[in-house]
Length: 307
Image (cartoon, rainbow, N blue to C red):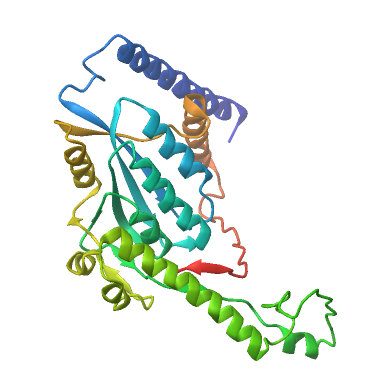
């Protein structure tokens, strides 16, 4: 690819950025002046907070949820969950934040492809739960894992010397096999957290503990089965969840789904679009386009997860 062609591609990418900037500015000005193109009549704004991937931290989720709670124009909130679960503490915090948000606005959980374990733990904090018939949910259980490489170290003639202030301080160490006392201790923690999970589901869903226990063995169930068991209120999409949220809030009109702005704001979105355009243009001209790229993943030992 010669220099002239590269320059043309670069100019085209930044030209597209500038055009997007002008369009966005017109939208912003239009909304400020009440333009009918952006002012949706007969519609009520419903904030949508998304929970995706593994749940390990709640900072971003909490910020987005509280922002919608404080915005007067947001009449209700949908928490869209598409997560296989995650850490115990983070899942419990999400549920607590959703319950807190309900003090000011109606909140409905919408379950996507997967809303299992910690994802379901968070969902039950909402006023109502909506799932697709084929949503994979449930998985009311807890797992604690740690590797044991003691035999490998022995074969390599490597030893690990540990000094502790108590007999249980290094429980779960990867450098030796656990003692019977440690196995009982760690299993006790797992069981206690599981009981907390079951209690939270029973309380939030208004179910008897015994009924929850019938499916609290870690199994994954479909949205259809979850509804039959009382773990889900309705079957439907994120749109149906938004309609239900407005109904609970007693607000007339169809929902206008509002998503939080991307991190970094409008300028960051423009830069992202421009970068994508440049990469696409480069791939179209690059002799390496057919080779592909693979990035190795990093597998870390798991701690205690809600699964």
